[in-house]
Length: 48
Image (cartoon, rainbow, N blue to C red):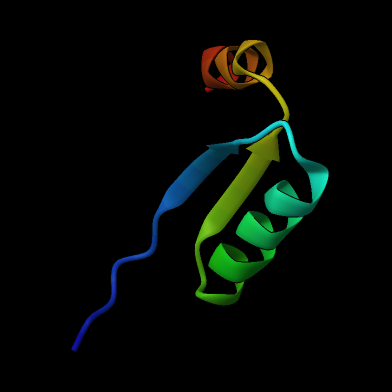
């Protein structure tokens, strides 16, 4: 079975939650970026 990997942008203001999100999803093979705020997320999306 083929597993699709995703590019994920996670947003959470809690550092521990961001780290857990990043670590968990990265361990599954996904490309993960975690930021603290909606403003940071929008800035990252504009870079793409």
